[in-house]
Amino acid sequence: MTPEFIFDREGEIDSLRRRLGKRQSFLLYGPSGVGKTFLLNRVLPEFPYLLYSPGSVSPQTVFRNLAVALLEARAPRLVQVFGARGMEGISAKSATALKGIVMDALHEGTYGVVLDHLKLPSYAFAAAMREVMGWGRTAVVTVARSAHMENLGFLQPFYPERSDRFEIRDFPPTVAERFIKEAARRAGLSAENMGEFIERLLEFGQGNPGAILSMLEMAKHPRYRSADHIKITPLYLDFRMNWKPAGVR
Image 1 (cartoon, one colour):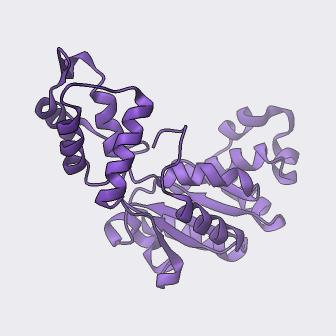
Image 2 (cartoon, helix red, strand yellow; image 1 turned 90 degrees about the horizontal axis):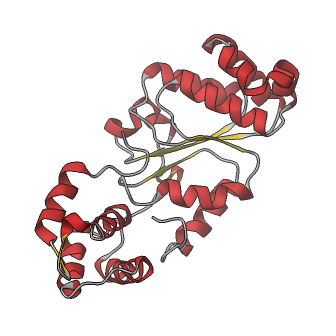
Image 3 (tube, helix red, strand yellow; image 1 turned 90 degrees about the vertical axis):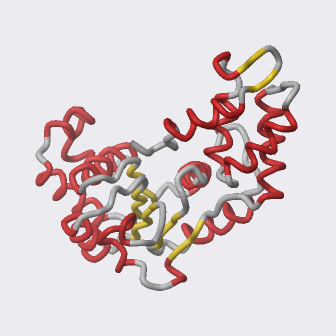
């Protein structure tokens, strides 16, 4: 979703706030482009105890991200170790040393961890997170496309109960149509075949906010315009070939 407006997600935001407020581990999941990271970014500032890892592809990446977040939060352990060197000091540390420093800081504080954009976590990744949850008594919120093994990897056993999982879904057709019209209005998009484009976008986007916004943005490009018409079929074919939601590589 674009950063300037939230559409019909008030219930999801309230549920997310309640879950984060409990300081318990849970899985946040939904298809690419549905708005998981967007909604997280809206509520995370309200929970300064949470440490955000924007890319969670390996234990090394996660501990480096957490070290940066802890330093920004002025965690005593990180300030003591790195002092004036700051980010430069973090970059100079080995992965093993950095893990030890982060684990000490988690043990001394009352933090939570958010692991966004998981990439099929390995057994080693899961073992490291088990340490974080156990020794540090730290809640770990993970973000994945689904609760299945192919997305959640070896973290799947961490969230065995339905209550451990929070799903963000694509918009149903009636909501998706209103979303398309409002997003098009905000983007200042117009065309003689706008009605047909909205109908096709409703079909092509399947209620996914990221997909819908991507195609609306494409529709402003001269490549997909002919006079005052949107060239719908070429636009959709290019979208299918090239679209990647934010955070997907």
